[in-house]
Amino acid sequence: MLLSKLIIKLQETFDREGEMETTCTGSTLPDGHGGPIPDVFESTVETLVVGEHPTIGKRVRLYL
Image 1: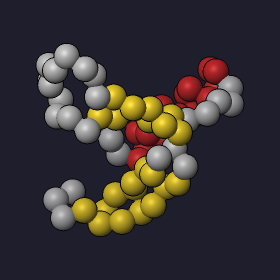
Image 2: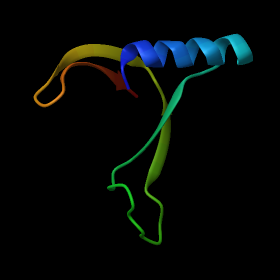
Image 3: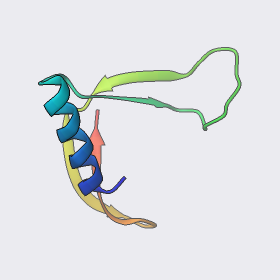
C-alpha cells in the first residue's frame, strides 16, 4: 500500500474512532497454508524505518 493511501485510511479511522494502539498481524507461513495449528501473531508497531528493497525500491518498514 502506498504511504499516501495508508495516511488517508489512518486519518479516516482516527477521525471516526479516536486515538488507539496500532497493531500488525502476521504469520511465518505462506498465505493459504492449511495446517492444523494456525501460525499467527499480533504485535504493536514500534518503529517506522525508511529503506530500500531490491524489488519494490524505496519503502517504509514497520518494526514490531
